Image (tube, rainbow, N blue to C red; front, top):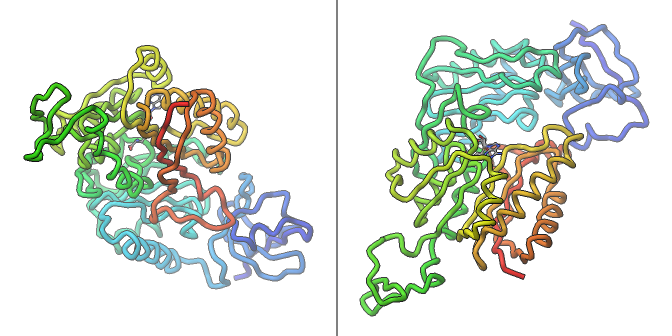
Length: 424
Ligand code: SAH
């Protein structure tokens, strides 16, 4: 069989050679062999030298998406080995994870395919026509590799339209219980793969949540608590303190969704965590998770819009030891970035004001249109306006189950920073 060929222009930026997995229509000189949408095409340079094989979709701005850098056939067995390799990589790098991302699209050389493993359940999201047409290969591979309790498809995302695809969600085969309890860093977390955000949970912050550990204790002294000669805590009035979490942080977890940050905060010794989310359903889920882990007495839950809530708390002069901001992606596309930056700046500015002097701001952005550099500039502007000085504890990215391709900044989407916040 003769595979169609797409010749790239001579005077294009050599993005593909630098590791970028997409080709845009403007980079193509000519196409030979009359490919149909979803077909495999050989991507060649202007003199016909082979570069890669890619999915072709003339309806999409991502007219070619790299599937393979070899000329070997792209067939069912290749898909199987790609998924198998992706899973082996997780077992190697995140050996303790029983739930994690197994396939992260382009960065696992399966463009437009997301596979998340929730213990015995798998969730699949398909974002490209090439994968859509071959999805049976994927399901067969998953059954063979994992023998899952069931597979659920969460292709209920509007970006599919850019590929000419309708939204779809539901059981791939037999129905099963979609509420699954996953294990993470020693905690039990109940997620609903059918109803939760994205595919149900955000595995990308597993290591970042664990990084909260040292920050959750050491706050008693600042509240005037002293330890007597028997090692018992005494309050400023000289009274013995009974609360075993007297040294723990008071934490505000904004955009809490499943409450994963709250759970980690409690596990690591927080005194009290306030969870805030606009969605009643999310708040219910966070509450169930607090109950499941025995943390209910150290938590409180508020369903409100964070923009209003943060401003009101500032007005009421409320403060916390640690404020966590893990908002959804405000910038859904490049055009929306300016508006998104205003949103990020607003919550960060108000969030900083709510941190006690010497306390901590934990702040994240999962918007891949927002570079790390712009994220940091936004934080500087917020700090200036809030009259705060920030000192970095740690800047982190997504976990190892969300690989990043050098040359493809789209795969490097998660920014996560922990700062001490001082008055200025
Ligand atoms: N920290 C979460 C993930 C956050 S997802 C976790 O660890 O699971 C983003 C969450 O923000 C969603 O649950 C969504 O309901 C909530 N959200 C979106 N807009 C909001 C707003 N304006 N105010 C408060 N919550 C909001």
